[in-house]
Amino acid sequence: MEIPQVNSENEGKSLEIMVNNLQNAIKELENVSGNLVTDNSLQKQFRIGNQVKRYYKTILYDISATDFYPCNPATFAEILALLTISFQDYNSNAQRYLENLSQLVKEMRERIDRHVGMDVTNMPRILLTPIFNGWEPETQEIIYQLGGKVIYSDWDFLGLLEEIPVSKDSDPIEEYARFLLNASNRGLQCLNNCDILVNSYKSYVKKTRVNGLIINQLSDCHIGSSCYDLLKNKIRTELRIPAVGINFKKIGENVEEIKLKLNSFMELFE
Image (tube, rainbow, N blue to C red; front, top):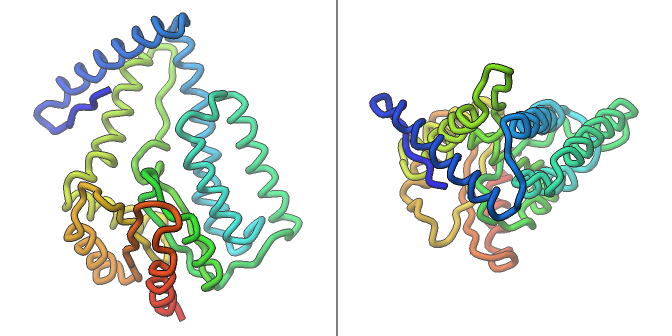
């Protein structure tokens, strides 16, 4: 579906277009699947999704910010990577996905309470982003070996962990349309605007209180290196935290180059 850009002058029209796009998409899905999509079925999925997002944020904001992890940081980063991938379709079973995520949070908290895991008190917390188009997974292991801990939180940065309002008087398609507009224009479409991108990252880095930023620069990405350079400089000079860019095209292609960059980067925390 096409998601229109929103500004103060066309907000109402953009919402109307988005609602229409959703209605057309639902009709096409109904024709393909033979299933009927009702307001009740949509609201049920939104309720499940809202609960999923709460658990996801618990892991991102509460557990990842503690001084004691329920596992070593490389494993924790692997869990966040799997959440990034599986969150896109809830493993095709939303209710089961919610139950599994609930159990994951419960198990993490129980391990922390029993002091089963790893003390990460003096390990800098490093945000690596964006990864939704692909990244080098060896990075999290390299950072761990160099004394740091990686977190992945693309869906939060892009606004996709915001909840969708659900009430008996609400129009679920309109609420979903508004959610997609807000998420796209706050996150995804800001990737097309250098100034908005920089400001979005600055706000998010301050919000999450990470100690450093690794920018995953995708080869052939529409965002130019000049924009990434501006972002790194702003993070370094205005927020006073280390930032570095690494290049990615395919897994395993330039691991040694990444190691060299990250070695220098992690020395800044000593």
